[in-house]
Length: 109
Image (cartoon, rainbow, N blue to C red; front, side, top):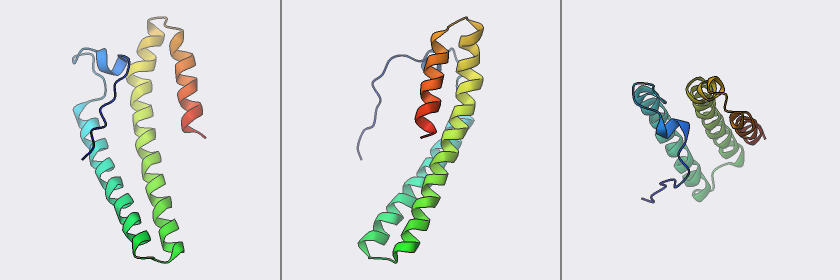
């Protein structure tokens, strides 16, 4: 299995103290569970392609996988707003607005 470790700058989610919270273990577990199901959906779509399944059925499965990813995105966005964006706004961090608007632009394409 490939390692998808992200090497990025420290973020509010990665630097907050546990008692302040970032996304909770419960949220992390729920998201990972959803992502595992989505991974299964994608593998199923690949198998459908390999078996030359009916195109309409494949398209329906792709749509379902996209909807599932959108759902995960909404859950993480809500957590990010509540745990990171609001906190940074309280700290008068003006950079968070530009960062947040960029994020919204990317996820609403």
